[in-house]
Amino acid sequence: GENVEQHPSTLSVQEGDSAVIKCTYSDSASNYFPWYKQELGKRPQLIIDIRSNVGEKKDQRIAVTLNKTAKHFSLHITETQPEDSAVYFCAAPNTGTASKLTFGTGTRLQVTL
Amino acid sequence: EAGVAQSPRYKIIEKRQSVAFWCNPISGHATLYWYQQILGQGPKLLIQFQNNGVVDDSQLPKDRFSAERLKGVDSTLKIQPAKLEDSAVYLCASSPDRPQETQYFGPGTRLLVL
Image (tube, rainbow over all chains, first blue to last red):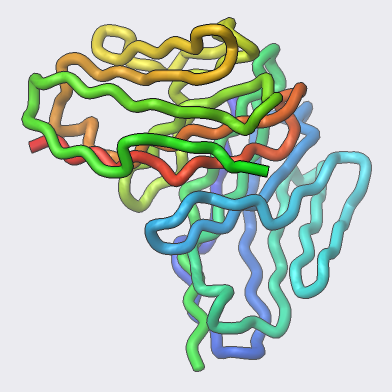
């Protein structure tokens, strides 16, 4: 099955700085990589995803990069704001018939004033 | 559009008791997932339904957990008997036709087993 590792487990940045979270995966056939944001006590919500046919995708202050050769993908948040404080999860699919998602262990991002 | 609904939101039970959770996915979504999220960890898939058929339950502790999705819409997840280590948030999610579409999560049920 898929093994997803996520680093760092906690990240503290000052408002306006950039934040980068990295994930590695084991299944070379994986082709879909979503990132979810989970605020305290709330449900996970998709913030961006990337498919294996592109190397980078950007949505305003959020971007995701994918390196299929090295089997890793990263979330980049620029100009961080206090409302970016949350736990971020990466995920990658098993490529069996169910294509279920395996989630990383999460990164707690704290944006300080 | 209405989101994924779950109930109850909170449940406290004693070990060896039974408990059931309910999920109503987004209308028209074929795929339904139940996840277990232990504090400080990422969601772990317990079971995945495609319409009313199970496509993956490899991580479901079948000696105590069961789930069904009658008529391919609502779903229930049951634990009987509960153990202390079952304390977690149980998240239901749904997605449209293919598994690799965006998964929309419900608010979750927070279970505490004493």
